Image (cartoon, rainbow, N blue to C red):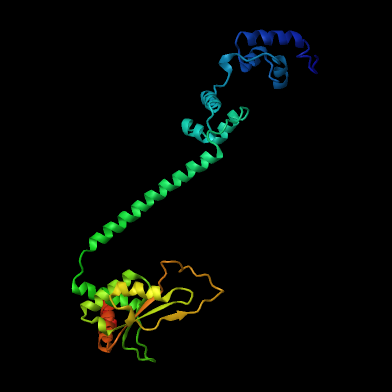
Amino acid sequence: MTHASGKYADFEGLREKAIALRREGLSVRQIRDRLKVFNNDILNRLLQGEPAPEWTKRPRAKDDLRERARELRLQGMTYDRIQMELGCSKSSISLWVRDLPKPEPRFSDEERLARMNAGLASLRAGQDRERLETKRIARESVGNLSDRELFLAGVTLYWAEGMKDKPYSRREALLFINSDPNVIKVYLSWLDMLGVARERLHLRVSIHESADPAEAERFWSDLTGVPQADFKRATLKKHNPKTTRKNTGEAYRGCLVIYVTKSAELYRRVEGAWYGIVLGAAPADRRSV
């Protein structure tokens, strides 16, 4: 090879020297300084095909991880499991093992579905236990109600679900409607505490026409202790074909309407007590009411 300045005219001789130095264990920089060859292109040509000594190779910190990842992959582990085992990224794992065959699935599709369903069932069972325990603790923390507590609870219940008097329509009487048997039980206990005899109650079922009014009346009669024969005629609600009802089936018994005769004075007490509750819940606002 010739050079414009003639400096590298004896290229082969220079290459022999460079190779000899390389085999002695010198680095590229050391050979450059020894031979005074500062042209990188020429230097690379001189050393072409000659491996670098071990001490000059840059250490690779991830070599051990790479080998371990390949071992684990050959054992059939997924990327997720290898990541959990080694603590390295999935992208690195993919790069290291992508030439290896994909492991056979540990479980069939049916087995995976069964395991997933079992896991979900266990999770839901645990959640159900937590819910029930929370409810149990709350229920047992209440204990027996005093007359005052029951009175305030009944007033609040009535004001949420009962008929209210309007300035444009005088309705000073107790009329209550609900479909929840437990709500009805509390309401009746409240009336009992107030001294309202069952003979003053007019009961009526309000139910969809597609249901069984007689069966509903038997249910509410057993719950309230009022003979079914004393019930007023049921109110049948027409079915709207454009809507989809969810309150169907054997558990659907419509709503029970409870009207208390001669209850104007009692209604006034209820309304007054309700606004007392409103004031008592925000004592700082009493002066502005």
